[in-house]
Image (cartoon, rainbow, N blue to C red; front, top):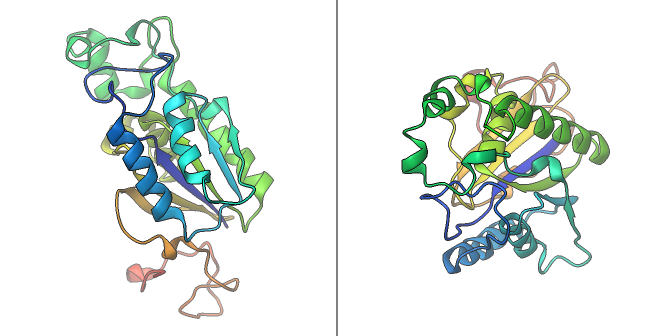
Length: 233
């Protein structure tokens, strides 16, 4: 019952108007640093077995803020959580890119999108989900860990967890410094929070015991609560 906390990096000067991609030297803005600090404060009540990050500066700085104040916490870089390699689209304004024929493919059929000189969104999902599965196996069923990554990467992981075709991943949003939580059980993943930008995180702690908190002996941790249940808070 491994719990994955996905955090998108905080704001940068390029976030929004420009497709930053793997542009080097893109750091958190003043507002982004404030967001990272607030993110760290929100996560403070939650014990983390690992803090993993994309290699890009904006993610490393966000993950670093979470690691501060956690004795012995180490930030581990995993390139598989790095941003999509947008190739020739990197560093270009989104308004300009919206005029490209590929833009409509990215919007309507992301599974068919291959960025010129870069990679496909399908490949991004494959590497990111593969990394999640490896970390889940490494940390075990009681593991709780943070991955700081990028919008499209997070959306691709969420789409996989929800059993959605990649062509539906544009229906998912991952705002700067937002939290998305997924609990992986033997039968299915449960998306606990999505694009959460505020609120308490105590409910993300794995429930005590092996069954559902509301007690049916025949229920397992993989069973969905019929009717929605009482929640975990």
